[in-house]
Length: 236
Image (cartoon, rainbow, N blue to C red; front, top):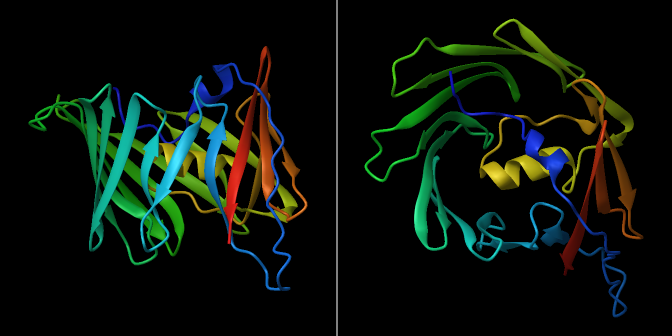
């Protein structure tokens, strides 16, 4: 059954070029700058540009012909994807008080008649279970999640388990794999404590940091392919 996917394996099959980025220091005073990702390369053949709203949340993701807009109304958000100006898909997301998605309805037709719906359950801020259904009425797909020390270490679906490992000395931060996942999807379900190091079979991540401690680049490795995502920051 086709269902809303949590992971984005396509990250590993794209061809990329690398650039070097760093946040500019504020020379006028000693206050610590706040930096946020303004764009990145490595996902597709054009830079991905992020636009933020007044609350500091991403409201638009653009790669030229591919544009995603995110609008919020209370605990609900609507995520619309356009390709060359034409409707591609729409996600209607309900979030809990922590800002984690509790229900995602992905509609692939304008009238919403074709859809994939995933409901998420949490233990605190740790997703514990998801149930995926669709408009075709096929049997639900149930995924369970296991956490250790606030890191999601495995997810099991249809009898298949994917395991995860972490850099326990590196806290999770923007620019990691989960940041890419949240940016591409427009919502968040996995909020781990540390940076992901490996998942599945042979897939691994390495990170380079700039002088400000931000992730300058993420390298995703799996047998036969390497993906490098480079970040540009806006620091104020």
